[in-house]
Length: 294
Image (tube, rainbow, N blue to C red):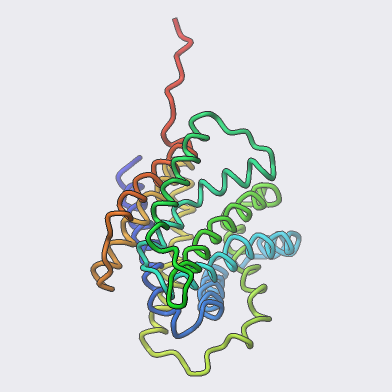
């Protein structure tokens, strides 16, 4: 990976890592549904400014319902679940649980599309699920004031991503990444608009909450999308996928420095196993194939 691409990767991880902090600040005042509408709607508008062309409009019109379904599972529903989780758990823990997305994506692909798994990937699944269990072990309290449902919501978000990613692979694979980005964000926004009047907060959120929400939309969504697809084009899929392992680190740093959150021993252990499992599932770590050359 070249130096410019490495810098893009670090910037992307830092931006996505900060998004968990923004949710932690804004979700209590906006509520999960309205916050994600602001996030996705604003980000979609920003991307439309760059991609407003007749060819884009035709592609989105042609695949509108695929974008709606993909946007619901890739953006709207997991965003709401993560925002709900942010009401109770730290941004670092939320990001670490979200890092298990490749694991649940592989499980969904295996169960739904019968995508075969290699031995090391199966090992990665069990390793990653053990890591998730360790991350959750200290927080599965379902009594009033407990964080059990927040943990369930965060894990549910990763399952949604697994469904959304596999659906997009099936239905949107021939469409450019830029059109897919603006299409799924638009589709996700469409799914949230009807529910918004029922969830709009009784009092207008504070200036700090608005700053966090708009930062989530611009710095945590629109800009990372641009960087992500630029990095994907120049560095390739596998190097770009390593951002999954860096995002939680930045989420923990942002949460510790700006929100005074703490990193526990179980979080460190769970992080190691979860990210190791993800690396095996995503085949970033793999057994070296024997050379057939004489």
